[in-house]
Every structure is written in structure tokens, then in C-alpha cells.
Length: 280
Length: 243
Image (cartoon, rainbow over the protein chains, first blue to last red):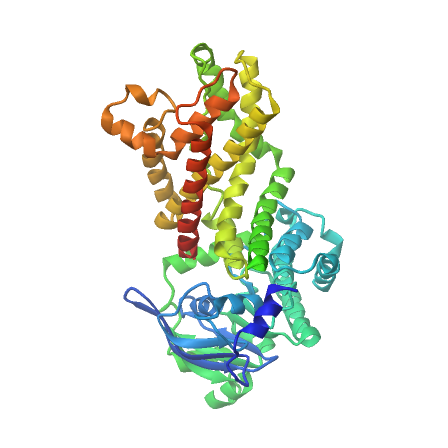
């Protein structure tokens, strides 16, 4: 029996209708308040987007929910488990695709998946089938024995998502899933993310700074600005509040008071370019 | 409890397996890492053969300077592993054993070169297995030490600087180059607390015919195991700082 299943029995669950909930979640780095009193609630099976420019706090929210960073104050629950007190249980039920490159280029795609299948204690007799299914789901079965460094950016992203799905997580976190990809590769990644939800009913929380991506994929979005949630709702509701014919870009400018070139510094630029380069 | 121990062991082995698979695909990395001990041995070999010493001191140096962790290329993988249910101490120990796999390949090369320059190697099974065990332990120890430094300084540039600063004293304040008995008292004290001293002592005893140990092989191994365990626990606590 896997560790995850054991723990599901042993740990008391907080009763909640939503699968993910945060209450005044806050993260402070010395003087900077990266995430400021974020409260939100995500339902089972929902595709939820955190949108905003670089430095808005999206990634920091994700790192707290995946238990990589401890919050300074506030609470959050994932699948009923408190992210601080039951972090090990949280890690057992989530999948996470970080923004940085998270597949190993010097081994094959199959080997990358095998290592994570073992880390998630997928039983030996199921391992082969799960890996095979993940590869064909993501359209990578033809190239599974190629070294990952020969992959294109879009293929690497699909492999990374395949890795995070092996153990059938209840909540999947995708940090900027299409940053640095060309439009065709981006479309392919979108299709796969949508199929993940329709085939497995996985709840997905993704971050993006592309408004058209949030518009295309998400049931609901939260617009983040300077660590706070400026607005939250379905893309169409948000657009309707701003005015007729508004795009999600207009919504964003409206709620954040964001002006072109006012946010983002050298570090963000160099980071985005670096990510773009490794995927390009 | 038993399940936890089993999971800990399999997780550790999985991390080490990742490294083995990488090495399997890339032999050049192993070869480049062998160049330095080879040069050392060829240049100083003659003298060392005469004084019946074995140049083992540079092993930890390499373990230290190539932590095989963090920095850009691997940071995303590390984030994903830290977000998995694997215990952090298993991740650290797995990384340490990954360094051991590289260390082992160097041990094989040192054996080969030692034969070339005419060192009288002790080929008994027990001795050879003993040497391999000590090399595994030593590599794990020093790579974990390096991981701790990396978690503390957090950038590659600073790590290189601090690494240079620490490895020289680590090397000289040990019995790697000259016997502890001829050192001034204060340096003797430091050297006795330096795990490298015990690694070198054990290797000298095990590797050549008629080799002697100052502290006794069991003391050496115990000292290495205890220091490795302590460093792994410290590193597991510090590991999340790389995020």
C-alpha cells in the first residue's frame, strides 16, 4: 500500500467543499511583501489561473501551496490538508511543474519518468503501464528513448507535465506552463492541459502572464498585482465589469492600474529571457 | 516505522539511480574527473611510491568542488523533488551517494595508476572492498559538506570562492600530505577533528601491502559514518533554502 493512501486514512481532514482554499495567505521576504493577504477558494475539477506581471507574487503563492516555502502568516488547505502542519500529506496529493527546467537533459524521457514513478512509490507492476500511458497521452511515445536534451521546448514541457501526472494528483500546479514557447508549441501544451482536466478531472492551478492563455484555459482567474488579488471571477464576468468589447488585457489594466514598463526589473527580464532561451 | 525506513531507503536509492543513469549515458564526465588524480599521481608518484604513501588527498577536493547539485541546471528538478513525498534527508543522502558513484570510478583509476608506478597494492578481497567502502563513505561525506556550503552561500560565484577558502585548510590540516606527529600542537588538534584524516588513514591501511593505521580501521570508519550522518541531517534542514 502506498504511503499516500495510508496517510489519507490516518490524518483528520478539514471538511471543505473546495479542494483548495487560502485564508489571508501572506509571505514576507525581509521588507518585501511578496504575497499580501491572499484569500481564494478553488472547487474540485476547476481550472484556475493566477495572472499578473512578473513579480506580482504568483510563483510565491504556488511555492507556498506546494509546501516549498512556509507562509509568514495566514492559512491554506489543499485537498483538506493544512499546508504547514500536514505538508507531507499535501505533497502526496499534488503534482507540480515548476517554471524552471525540471527534466534531466542527460537521460531519456522514459528514465525521467521512471525516476519520478519510483519517488512517488507507484507499485512496480503498474509502473510500466503508467509511464507508457503518460508518454502516449502527451504524444511522446515515439521519442521516449531519446535524450531529453534533444527535445524541443514544447516537448520538454509536455514531458514535465507527464512527470507530474504519473501519480494521478488531485491538484496540479503549473507555473507559467507556456513561457518561452512559440505559438504552435503553446497551442499543443494548451490542448494537453485541457485534456488532462476532461480525462482525469484534475483540478489545475496555473500561473501565467499571458492574458490570452488565461482567457483560453481558465474557468476563473485571479488578477494579482503587487502581492494582492486585485480581481477574481470568470474571464467573461471580469470583461463585462470593465465594459463592452473589453479584453482580459483591458481588465488587467483596469484592476491593477498597471502601466506598460512600470513593473519588472532587470532581474525579471534576465530570468524570463533565460527561461525562454532554454525552452526555445 | 518499518514502512518509513523502507520508503527512506528506496527514495535514497532512486536519487542515486538517477546519477547512475546519467553516468551511464556520459562517460566523458567520468574521464575528465579522472584527469586530476592521474596528473597528481604521475607527477608526485615517484616520490610517493618511495615513501609508501598514496595520493588520496585530492579525492575529497573533487567531491567538494563538484557538488553536482543546485545551480540553474538542476534547480527545477530539485524543486519538483522537494514537492514530492520523498523525505528531505533521503534526497540529501541520495545526492551524497551520487557523488560516491563518481568517487568510485576515481578509485578504480587510482588503483590502475598506482600499479603503473609500482606501488605494492594489497589485492586481498577484504582490502579492496574496504577501500571501495571508505571511498563511498568519504565521497558522501565531503559532497554533503559541499551541499551545506552551497545551501548557505546560494550562488555559484560565492560557492567557488568559499570552496577554495575551505578546501586548502581542510587539506593541510589533515594527514593527507605529512604525518600529524610533526605538526604544531594546535594544528594536530584541528587535524584530529578533520574527517579527511580518518579517510586517508583508512585508505593507507587498506590499500598497500604493509599499510599501517594510526587510529585503527574501525575508529576510522566509525568517525566517517558519524560525521556523514551528522552532515546529512544538517543538509536536510538547509536543503529547502535553495528555493
